[in-house]
Image (cartoon, rainbow, N blue to C red; front, side):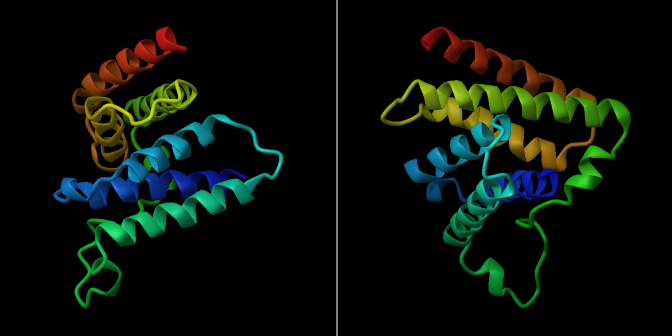
Length: 163
């Protein structure tokens, strides 16, 4: 199940990479899919990896909607690729631990956001989730990750108080 979970986590990061420079392509469905995917990371599903596989497919479809030419590019740059999660989790100990804590924190925040059943998620809250996911895939310095962890924790606390 961890393989499918990691693939879905990579797909979440891939969508955030695709959004980088394409913020106008974000739709409410994009936000809901990100929140749903992050929330799923906390759940232990009876159907096992199937839930993660289905969400991974939806995330890839969303990434293809955001950057439709990327999948057929003759000179792929790799910017929008899903990262290899093994490389992320096996990075320098402090960095890997911060990334793991950040993913856990935004997953908890997303679960509380989903439970709040809002008609739409505030853009400023979604920016925190998008920035955190992007950072998990791309940042390699503790000093870049710590402010994001603080923002994510504040977001989580905000939605805990709503539920």
